[in-house]
Length: 297
Length: 337
Image (cartoon, rainbow over all chains, first blue to last red):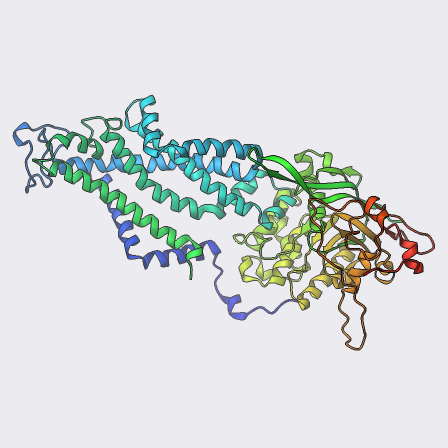
């Protein structure tokens, strides 16, 4: 009656496919040096944002006119700005602002995007048409312009920047999630649990969401880079963090008048932005390569 | 005397085709077009037909996996199509389905315990404490070992997976199971095992099957009665013996002549039809088979034949939808190939 059971598989320890999958992803990610470099940088940035302000001695906000516009030195590693503030201290303190904006805005955008995307893909028809047309409108704006408009309406502050970036992240997530939901929804096992009488909530949370996590994770990682860049852009335009907050975009803007004679004023905040964006992009690309089964050879 | 467990009346399933800039409905795919039949308690009724004739659509419409366009589906005296979503969810306990593809029909992320446990949890069939014992019992029933309870689908073969699918359907103690091409994806030796399992379960649990298949050999093995569909319509319905020995509709005859005979010395006169199945978007007028039927006349083009019987030629509720049952039988009409 029973088909033959291989003895070796019988004795092998039961591993869930999720765990097996995770191990696989990790193996691939580890062999991708660029992605690992990105990942290590991200961890380093996160640690810095928490521990940095305790370690750095100089006050990032206190002006010190006697030491203004000094080049990099042993005391001021990255030099000082036009108020004599330590640029290194400001960059370290600004790290937490940057990461806070990046993570929070993407997280909020992801929650709403996944919600709309799943609803759209699962229920289809009119709801789908309405949601996706709204998303199309949001997507039609260039991201920074949309964020600019939102911040212009709400007023310039870090929290408003987060709201703005969240809103323009929503359609990106919604689209991806909708597509994946459409793919999973038509699988027979969804029909099977439906035939058993499962409710829509049960199907969505237990059977659809776990199966569409990969594209969401990839998108979230890559979106953080965009969010950081947009936040810096908005602050540069004076619409985000307000002086004297040590936000990197705002530092660039303030240093603009002195950048020809004292390039270090803008160089270091600029490099900091590049480093964070690059780290998330590298890591995100690596995660995508590791998670995307279509690239498996 | 057996009663009708499932009664389908004038079931229609049209899928709209949207087109144009405004996305308006331009036409329908008439997948199932006004069919009526009943399934008696305890029997196996098979639906056969070629790809795209609407047999799977019928099964899905009965279960409301796709909402049918119109018609009535009466199950155990209740009209399923008029039930609310919540009422329907309760009803689903009695009416289960086993799918074709054992690789797609179970969630790869769940163990057997979770799959069967979820089925019971959804319908709340047993107190939580007794569920594990029941899961093991179900596994034994379908021929899996109790020790496999914490395994994932990828650790099973196709045949074993199909058994999991069967166990899942049985987990809620259904009265009727729709088998949608349930053995088509399995290789022949496993097919036989699964078919015998289905038969055994039918006897033990007093199940009723609606068996959807394109495989006439399988149908012959398992059915009590057979229903033949062509392009969304029923062309013939009869008990198994009458249908296989005494087909009346030209389409059924063609279909049966396609069964291979494992004896090279027998010379078969296989009927080869001309052309392809017409599109269900604009099905032919009158009898849908008239474009390919060797006996077709002008009447066939204009009048849609009803399912009817002829007391002299057909017994036991054998019915066929053809204008010329008698003429073809007597040899008065000759095929025109």
